[in-house]
Length: 245
Image (cartoon, rainbow, N blue to C red; front, side, top):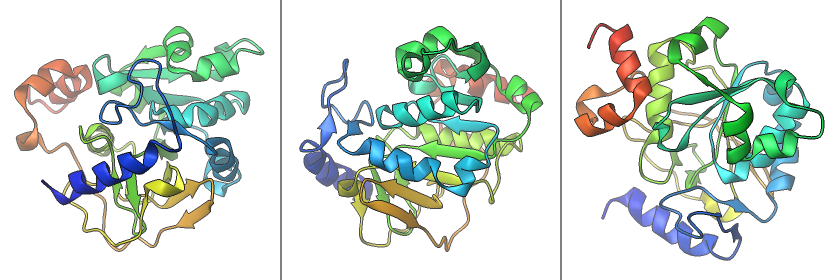
């Protein structure tokens, strides 16, 4: 069993006490990143941060704990891109101007994103410009900024696609929002695909990370299963853009 798997499973045990069940996956944390008690407090801290305040085009993951943050993005008139579940249907673009008054809460839910969001390709994202803010949930985050997802590597893959297209770089703010039980006290060694975050927001406070390693760049094609490429339209699009297909 890998170190990351051990850490995830320890934290998933603790999460059962504070997590809010998903409508589809209940408490199966291998399939979703849950909302949790106090996520509204963590969100308040996140939106008070200068990086969020100054953002104009963001990427927000579809994690349950970020529903309130997506609502705040909509109410603040900040457009953002979100991936669909498993990236199977690519990315959605949410233009707050197209969300009727009073519908921000619904639009922030995953089903609401399907209604108000519009499919957007990597090429269309690139035409809109660079992301100036990324926010993600996580299964676990270490105090030196190493983030673990559910174990499927979706955020790492999205980061790889975005770096290949110049949409993000070493200086792009990447923040994580998790419960305090999801913090890992020890310093972890990042793998070649692990994304290091700059700040972690929990109900207990904001944690600034002093990154001591660089983030990865590019999609690591040799690490991908051909089946995953076949099931992920943006990867196929990126191959075309790079002349690999």
